[in-house]
Length: 495
Image (cartoon, rainbow, N blue to C red; front, side):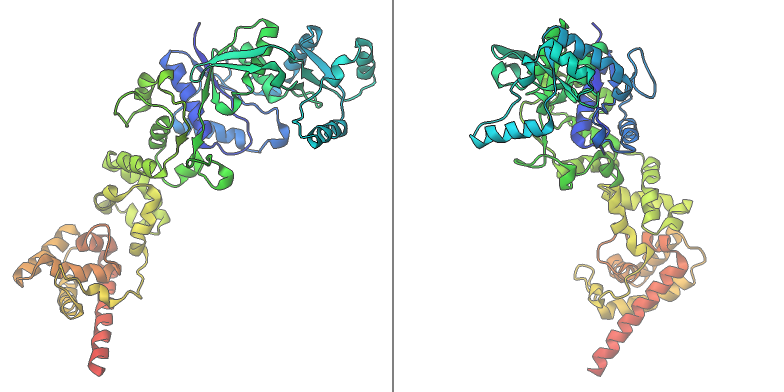
């Protein structure tokens, strides 16, 4: 039988990384086996529906490179692929179960259920539905239905025996039926519950492998009772372990953990996120860490999936993203960096073709995530003119305010007279002047860089910064630096 997997999110908000990892593993297993990866939108819980969430699912999967073979937007032989559009098909299956004695109509009101729950819990027990309506006669059920009385349809779980199944990761799972509740199959609004629609859809859509979070491990025995009741073949279950923030906390958007969209907006590369996410709960069986999607497809196996919860390590993701950035072609890096340069206020510099190579050289080796760029280059957009003149002192370069003052007094007229303003001419003028005066390059370049940046640590050196700033702004900053040093020297003399 051809492998058919599915990703079936509920449109209730942004896609967190746990959901995306489930989609990734389902996609990888289908593609590894030349099978079909299907997208299904499970929107039976209309109360939690979030406008735009369905479009976010599409956008996230496309950005991640996980293209589906069948789905709401492209169709297929098993549509519709949105559960609300399949609404009319679920009730007949539920009624079939009622006829078989595997389900029953329940007319208990919310108030009645709460009252019975309170009584059980008052005695220290755990409430589960007591099959109160199972004993209703067929005639009474028909009378109440004809009267338009609200109802749900519940699964009739056996009170004895076991429900069991085999999971590809956790092995054989067996649950005593006496511990299982009679879950609702059809709600009072006529919509199926998530659990019931899930079973009907997986069967009618020919799903062979169900990859999902381990939070559904406890529900699967009830699913399989439904498969048995209909006489259907069960899919292969693969319950994936939870992704944790740390040893005791799950990842949660509510607690501020980043979604895939958040990570992309922070400047992580989608391919780096996917590469890292594949390794959060799966091992290729060797020491490899870097994979393309095609390489993941070849290496992926169910046997490599872990039974233990996996920690989402942001530092490891940042490291991996930095490695991806360093391996990028320079032009491709610059295209990704340019929007962040514009956001940092240096858009005019970024648009100048003469500066592209400079930005690539000074930024690419230092970029871990693209949002870092703003803090690295913001001094190019605006100098913090209140910097301390103590920055001009550097033991390694043998500079101090007095030496720096002399350097700036000599450099300003030198650069004012420069016929061309580019890296080559700046280099020749400054390095040539240092050689002529018998001065170390660092002694000359340190005060020039401090005056232009107001910082001791910058991407690139004085020559690259001057080329980016241009003649007018460079000279303005150098004159300001000299003015600050002159002012300090005056203060010292007065003292």
